[in-house]
Amino acid sequence: MLINFVSMHFAKHMINSKNIVAVLLVSVLMLSCESMLEKDISMVAPVAFYEADVLLDDMKKGRKFPKEQVIYVEGYIKETNTKNGNFNILIKGTTNQSHYIICEMNDSFKKATLGLEKGQAVAIKGVLKGYLNDVILLNCVMDNTFLDE
Amino acid sequence: MNKVLLLLTTLVLTLSNDSSDKVICRQGSVSFFSYTSVENIKAQNNQVSSIIDFESSKIAVSMLMNAFVFEKALMREHFNESYIESDIYPKATFEGEILDFEPAMEGAQIRIVKGLFTMHGVAEELEIKTKIEKSGSTFTLTGSFETLVESYDINIPPLLAGNIAKTISVDFRFEYEPYEEK
Image (cartoon, rainbow over all chains, first blue to last red):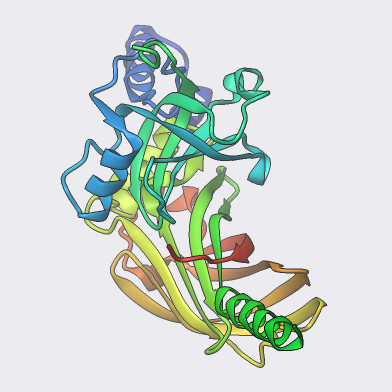
């Protein structure tokens, strides 16, 4: 919205040095506003490491969690699907629960998720949004760096 | 032998009745659109949760407001921080009833879903025309409705008033499967 306002503003006025400074400021603002949801988080260090059971337990009990932050989760694949045009992985823990961790994968990781099978161990990084019936992670990427350690 | 068969049949029927009392949707989709001459804003939330109880025809929907995905980061930021205030009001919910619902009816049925939609701390009564399709044990609910921004006590700065439509269009699609509580 702000970008459109600025565009309209420039359409109405001649470009001068003040306007160039304004453009630079808006560009910096746009770059700083690019959040964890818009960028590839492969190289982003997670703020917390979880096993699926622990994360599910924490969320169900309403414990404090790193909302809107990148976290790392290890667990087992309950299901993969392509609902709503996205590739999703549902992770379960080792206990028999009816709650899961839903990971909506980043588009660039669709290929990496092909061939995954139910019950397979998996490690994923994603932006933690919160908890409904299940924990919700968006913009997820595969990260098996520590899986076998 | 016949008695054992009868007992097993009864048990299977009882268990299948229990599991089919409720259906759950873990990844429903809700999208909204705002059309103005200045700009169009679209956002989609693909992780909406919903449960239907067949016995009472009650339906509950819950969504995280910070899980809406926008085309531009700034739109999402304004939505969460300035308008919806998702830190204070993290969820939107709908609790209602599917009127004249026939869970056993295969194929499509058009029904009115009536209930309270709560967003930004404000509850609004809605009646939504909804298409319900049953195929085996799965149900799909689809529909759309319009709602007024001013109904939800959302403050829009005068500078940006032209960018946001007074009436927002909402589309939804939920796929349900049997709910097995463990």
